[in-house]
Length: 140
Image (cartoon, rainbow, N blue to C red; front, top):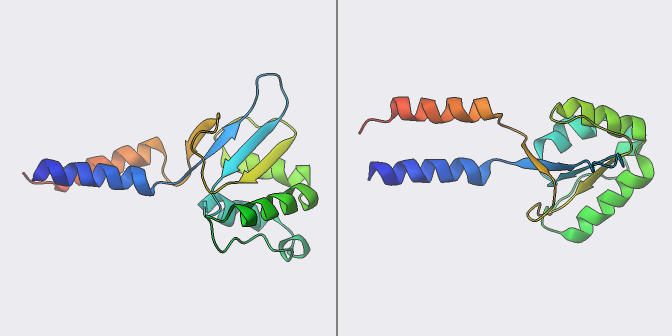
């Protein structure tokens, strides 16, 4: 029974942990940041970098599984967000060395993309601390 509880806990962490992917080709052609629309870094970091006029164009996505909405916002980003802002966002992520030009693409699914994956809300150390805290409180 305790083993089952442990597996459920580990599965829940991996299921609910969000993340993003970054693809920086070796030939120096810039970087593409792929994120799910509900990614904390998208809402907390990226949107806070936009000026009110740009933000008023509508960068929120109601249905994060809707590819049409994601593509619409991707088009808004491409047409209205300056490279300077995208580079600032990439640097704030602090997970990779950004190269210009930077692209940000929202996608309902990140599975299958050839890119490096980064956990956005938990670092590896946070994950280890959480698991170790669980096992300290776990009494067989």
